Image 1 (cartoon, rainbow, N blue to C red):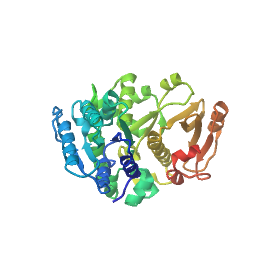
Image 2 (cartoon, rainbow, N blue to C red):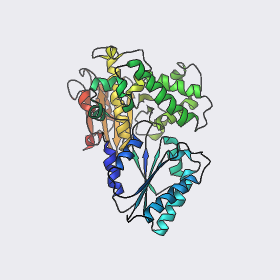
Image 3 (cartoon, helix red, strand yellow):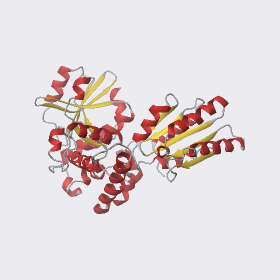
Image 4 (spheres, rainbow, N blue to C red):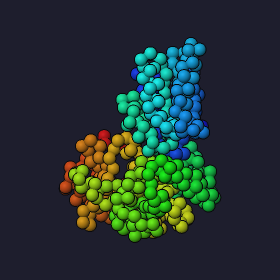
Length: 395
């Protein structure tokens, strides 16, 4: 079975003497539970693996019961530690307070219970961590699968990644496009939005939220104001509401509204967003296009390539603490700006040959640029770029 690189990171952390709660966080259907099941094949000490999936949310004592079960397994074994894994932990009311209580008790009594928490709702996980568990945890983010993972696990070509995106559960359906679209729409999009946003936050207009996601996916890789977005929505709302909904969609790894880089935080907040999906499956599932419509030279091909590069950057920048922007001033534009520390990288994407570089020249004149990168057939083509380690660009 294919192993994601985060498995090695998790194994290494469990072997360390200094112990922290390990949080596996990411969107649905990217393999969090599978990764933990793979982990269990490597450990040689007792464990307790429980899921709160079917537990009433009001059963606040459930976490304490699982914790005590792990402690009993430790006492009845000759091991120096025990591993407690709780899946869907966010479904229990006040879960973070319960975890804090048990964790602190183990620290006082020097009981070595190692803990891994999984949750499908990034919104609730983040809320619980900031409320109660400060200083007690580390997060391992599981982003959407990248091209190399889809290729190694399922034999994807670059063009299949470009159109079908990177949900592992959908890989078996790519030769039946209707079945693939049904899976993405119903098992991924509808389930995630309904369970992770509508049911868990105060959404007054759920139809507007879903409509916003659909429209913004169709505009992936394009700069479009909320005012213009409203003109494409069947259920109208104000720009403040839409900005809040976009924030929630970004938190669950669905779509981002990239902000214009200006060097000023105030200007950032007031900029027009550049929309980009976290997974190119979202771009194509709402289109009337087929894979044959998206071949090199087609009208849509360039946008698909830029959207795929954007999705790769979004995921990699998020897990590596790199800020991602775009830049535009007058007729000059740069597709992506990457910022790590004080280093700025400007990146322009072309699906064919590079005809003009004026935007990057203007950006370099205005800001101190660490690197200027062009993705094109003349330089690094997009099929090569999606295999690059983003961190390495800053070396």
